[in-house]
Image (cartoon, rainbow, N blue to C red; front, top):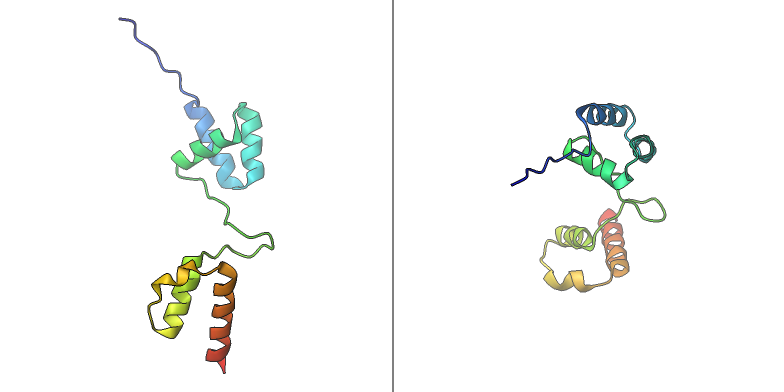
Amino acid sequence: MTEVTRVPNYTDEMVNAMVADYQDNPSKDTVAKLASEFNKSTRSIVAKLVREGVYVAAPRVTKTGAPVIRKAELVAQIQDQLGIALPSLEKASKQDLEVLVDAIRSEVER
């Protein structure tokens, strides 16, 4: 039977260079530069950096630049402020939950 020799996608030198470059400047631009430098896709570079434990994902933000807040977090805030459990509240729209959180905050501040 013939043995199949596996050729690694990245050499140790490539990995060391990638990690060093990314740690110096952890950004999308650095990933794009590394992808073109090593003739790999950006997804491949990101996957390798994740495997090496150095990749830092950009925080998720809305179109306005505000951080993304999940409905479950809004429900938790409401339940904490009111001191009661409302398990079906997550079925409300996110806009309604945001209005409710703001209303509760303004009542508490009075």
